[in-house]
Image 1 (cartoon, helix red, strand yellow):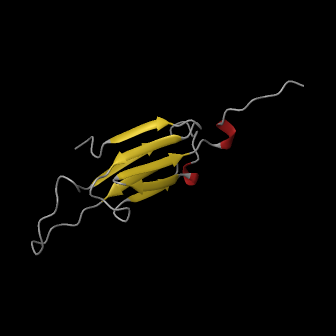
Image 2 (tube, one colour; image 1 turned 45 degrees about the vertical axis):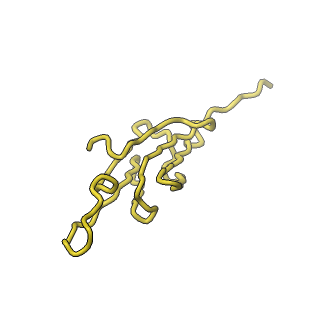
Image 3 (cartoon, rainbow, N blue to C red; image 1 turned 90 degrees about the vertical axis):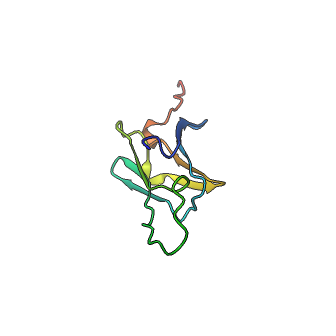
Length: 107
């Protein structure tokens, strides 16, 4: 389960870091996204089955905790935006203003 859930990380056309997770069977209320220091953590904790209802869906909804670290302090984690649609969680993490590419005009 070390690769669970399936995750893709890439840069978009604006140099933002994009984290995408395949989370079929989840709702946005199930998922917790936490930013602390230079880390962003995404997690879900499943409820233990008490035997009263139908058994939990073990394949589609297992507990997980994934943490991504910004070692070079390039990203503005507190300005991250998250969306969840059709089982795909997408988190867009913008670059910090001071590290964004810029053009210097010649005087």
